[in-house]
Every structure is written in structure tokens, then in C-alpha cells.
Amino acid sequence: MKFAVTSKGDQKSNRIKAIMEQYLLDFDLERNIKEPDLVISVGGDGTFLHAVHHYFHRLKQTAFIGVHTGHLGFYADWLPEEVEKLVIEVAKQKFEIVEYPLLSLKIFYENKKEAERFLALNETTIKKVEGSVVLDVTIKGEHFERFRGDGLCVSTPSGSTAYNKALGGAIIHPSLSTMQITEMSSINNRVYRTIGSPLILPSHHVCQFKPVDKEQSFIMTIDHITKSVENVTALECSVAKERIRFARFRSFPFWKRVHDSFISDECY
Ligand code: NAD
Image 1 (cartoon, rainbow, N blue to C red):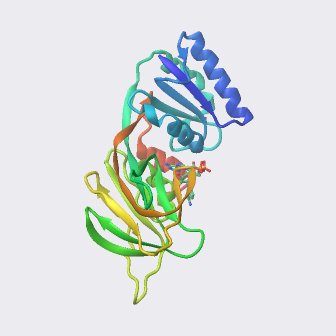
Image 2 (tube, rainbow, N blue to C red):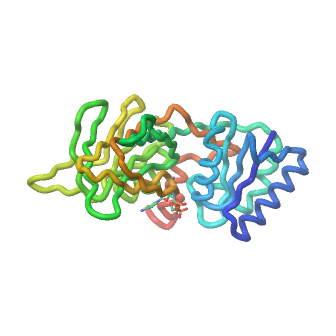
């Protein structure tokens, strides 16, 4: 089996990366940065997101696993103290694969024939530096609402515990192939009206956001990436055909991860 280990770049993560690489080489596994079967990210959820984006072109062949060197992460859920145990499990070369949904984002530009396509593991957000975001929201080709506010977030189920949660979105189990739209401070008064609640869409629904004003520039985030876009005619989100594959070496149920991350054992 071919493996690659990525690191956050700090001293602790680099040290654990070096230890893991040596152990895995001692077990006669092949280090292959270009075409790994397994990517082990060492750092935090941010490091994990970087690693996944780096290998998005190999989703069918590559599985991922995360070790955290800071606080417990959602993707980086192995402790540094468990590294030896993890290496022994990896060396057995037999592991379960758990697949989670991804988000597909298409950006259509005024002056380009082809849309630009991105995949997100957590979410994409649409914001502006100045003024309100004004977008016509269409679901499955039908006009739904005209949104005015700070912005919109479209997240995956595994991203539902990230930015989406801070916006009051629901936490969704990643076995469900859905995407969720949450608002950022929408303007609601006698003139402007938005639904106000998060929307959870199934995998066969496509939503489009069309800029209403002539000004078609936005600040977009795609997971950890921030991008400014101009001359946008439409943004399109759907549940991606592609899925991410997690290597599972032990059981760590999603709801236990939610509990351990957000509710301490001292809470009732
Ligand atoms: P980062 O690594 O500092 O991540 C920010 C925080 O988000 C970290 O605590 C990380 O553990 C947590 N996180 C990331 N993915 C998560 C997930 N799926 N479930 C629960 N927590 C998760 O910053 P970055 O490298 O720029 O990471 C980008 C991510 O940060 C974005 O995808 C977004 O979800 C998140 N974010 C959250 C907020 C917010 O909660 N208000 C604001 C901006 C960005």
C-alpha cells in the first residue's frame, strides 16, 4: 500500500509525521506523495481540508485519515498518543472505508463559456466586502426567494458541524446525501422577506444563486480557501457525484464525535 503523510508544519506535527513515516517504511509500506492509497494528515481539521483539496483528483483511489496535534478535530480524530496503534492498523493494510458526501459548486461568468467547478468537503459561502449580498435563489429551476443580507452558506453533512453550526444550521448525519443552505444575517422587514430557516435539500435538487445588482463581485469561501470572484452570472450548488473516502480503523460514531466536541462530560 502506498501512503503519504501531510503535516500542519509546526514542530509537533512535523515530528509526528516523521515518526509515522519511519514506522510505515519499517513495515515495508511504500511512501508515494503523488499517488497514495492512504493519506494521513497530521495537524487539525484545517490540515485535513488542505490534504483533501490536494488530492481531490484522486478521490476514487485515495482514502483519508486525520491525527490531531491540537484539540480534537472532526476529521482529525486520532490522538498523537495513538500513533503507534494507528500505524499497526495501517500496516495490516485492511481497513473499512466510509464514504461521505461532498458539495459541488459551479461558478458561471459573464465572459466565460465554461463554468468553473469546485468541490467542498465542508461548505461554500457567498459574501461581499461592502454592502449586502442580493441574490435570487432558485431551487430545482423554480424561483424561491430574493435574498438580501450578509451572505449564504451551503454546507455538506460533514461540514454541518463547522461554519453551518455557527449560523444556526442543523447538524446532519453524513450518511445522508444532502446539502444545507443557511443565511447570514438576512434583512427581513415589510419590503424584504427571506425564509429565515435553514433549508436541507436532497441530492437530486440543484440550487442556483443569481446576482440581482449589476455589481457581480463576491467574496467566496470554499472550505479553507477564500476567493474573490467578478462578473458572476450565477452560482450553482448540488450534492456532488464524487464522495470522499475515510479510512476507518476503529469505531468513532458521528454523534459521539459531536458530543465530545461540543458537550463536555461535566454537562448533563
Ligand atoms: P481553522 O483550521 O482555524 O478551522 C476553524 C475551526 O473550524 C477549527 O476549530 C476546526 O476544528 C473547525 N472545523 C473545521 N471543519 C469542521 C467540521 N467539519 N466540523 C466541526 N468543526 C470543524 O480554519 P481553516 O483552515 O480556514 O478552516 C476552514 C473552516 O473553518 C471552514 O470550512 C469553516 O467551516 C470553518 N469556519 C468556521 C467559522 C465559524 O464557525 N464561525 C467561520 C469561518 C470558518
